[in-house]
Image 1 (cartoon, rainbow, N blue to C red):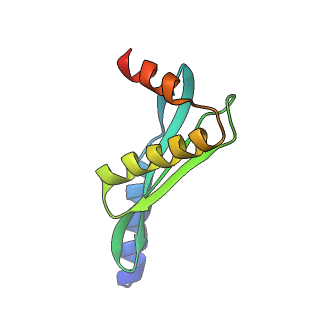
Image 2 (cartoon, one colour):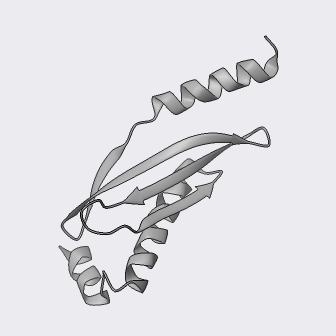
Length: 98
């Protein structure tokens, strides 16, 4: 087996180690995933956030930083929710202070 096969196996195992997480936003249960992938021989991360039963909006981000992708994914979701009128600034402030 060549390097590519080993790299694919390692990447597959890394992906298998990651699980889905659940979070809450304004009383709605939301799903959040962060998954690693290889791009140009470098480890990158792809984040997704969605809230089934509330909205079809999906937050998405891709970065080389594991910690950064979570924040960017959540920011993308919240920005889209604001644009669609699902979250008002007042609701957001109340939620932040609760």
